[in-house]
Amino acid sequence: MAVAASLVQGVYILERDRQEKREGSNALAPPWWTFFQFQLLRPLVDDVDSSIFGAIYEFRPSSSQCNDTIYTSPRYVIAFRGTLTKSHSVSRDIELDIHLIKQGLHRTSRSEIAIQAVRNMVATVGDSNVWLAGHSLGSAMAMLTGKTMAKNGMFIESFLFNPPFVSAPIERIKDERVKHGIRFAGSVITAGLTIAMQAKKPKDLSVDPFVALAAWVPGLFVNPSDHICSEYIGYFEHRRKMDEIGAGMIERLATQNSLGGLLMGAFGKESEALHLIPSASLTVNITPSRDFKEAHGIHQWWKADLQVENKLYNYK
Image (cartoon, rainbow, N blue to C red):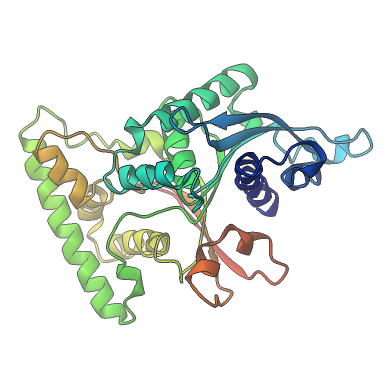
């Protein structure tokens, strides 16, 4: 976890180095990967603003450590940074944030560059030798890439830090009964709309599109004080509760669709709700955060006093 987070941080600093023209011995990014015996294979560059949004790292352990680490480490890690609030890249990053909110990240040129880079690497070395990592907007990019590969039967180990969940922040409601009531009503409405929309199409309701993705179990790392990603906690727990009360079939329909996506589909607009996934290893940071900046930051994931809880959710 700390290694993957550090490699993502390396991408942030790579772009800062580029913006501030720090090169050679003045560059600040290399220690973020060399400390863990990775080398930068190549950066991933946005075709619109020429900013560095990702990086491909190669693991190069020393000969003395090779036998100890070769079986627990990837050969390559492809990492993506999130939004940088610096003038040289912020406009493009915010543009992509808006595409994400509108469920259209998959239609952007940056996502095409990312997916192609992963496809090429997997075709060369195999999916078991590649890890994906990302933070915030970058975790959405990694999520999109991982889902795309999983649909084709290639399951890449993924570390997604503070992944955006595009939804009302229901998880922030303190009253558990109110929270469950809102989620239950939302599930019933979403499932009903799903059935109504699918009735207009020659589509078999018994076909479950989540089944193809179920074997992909990305690692999600979330903070309950971060409203951008905390909804994942409720998303998976609500699915479990719906199964317990015998409403699993309703939730199976609801969990695969978002109200926004259904409405866009009704108007003939293609969308993909990245945040809807069947399985995950969910790690929650239960260490108190001082503010939103700390709760959403990448730095929390390598702190010495980090306390976490982990749950595995398998779609059945």
